[in-house]
Image 1 (cartoon, rainbow, N blue to C red):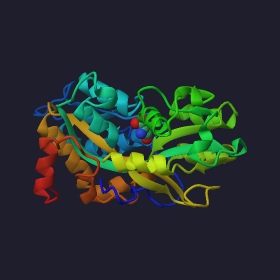
Image 2 (image 1 turned 90 degrees about the vertical axis):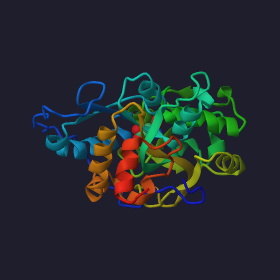
Image 3 (image 1 turned 120 degrees about the horizontal axis):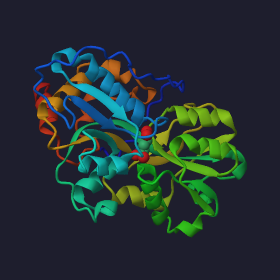
Image 4 (image 1 turned 180 degrees about the horizontal axis):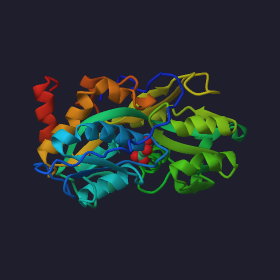
Length: 336
Ligand code: GLU
């Protein structure tokens, strides 16, 4: 990732399209298909909460893969999961074929650091391509008076589900600020879909996400009660970004959401698609081909993809080696 560049958070209209999984995959699977996954020709992509961006991102990838099913025989399906950390554990246990994970957790998994230090390096982890930028996003109820990250001290905060990337990233932010768990009045582990309900019901003062923008949950929350996006900046955050290659400063552009007129400074990561080295190279090749050959269509499938550029998705955020199937496509198309 270019550390000096703001993340590729798009400034497109805050109208978040409703996204429907294609339910009409009725073509027969090619009987003589050469490819194989854990379950015959079904490729399962681990994502996140159904109300996040990973789930529709996985859906967009599958939609394009399934369009070519008659020729390659692969049936792609998405699975809703707890998020990045759960996805990496499931991939390692061979419970998923592919997964979307934050670039910082990809880095720690392949190196066996942080919460993956007990498990050791996941040396079979392979990257395929990166997707959208994700911002560490703090949303507060306006009446809470929270205006900056430091104001979360002593407040009731939704930190995310165990197994989610956001929960683990919040722990790092707290560490950087020199806080312990007791520095929050409460730390709730709401699911992504529950967070803004708790915020508007005044059960929580603020909630945290690590998510691409614009997205449906923030859009909905900003319309459901008086909320503000909180700036995540200052010396501790600057040090965090400086020390770690997978973090970059980011901005949630003003005007992206109703009620959020000004740019909000924060920092973030990149969402990345990963697999195990064991997955058949022909399958990985077909997935990359489906997305990269139909890139304009892919970009239109979620507003957070609006400003993606093909060339940037090859290396940005990918610390694990690229899978052979992805390398084949990138070389053929002079992207590598
Ligand atoms: N970055 C989040 C996580 O790994 C998931 C965000 C999403 O679902 O869009 O926990």
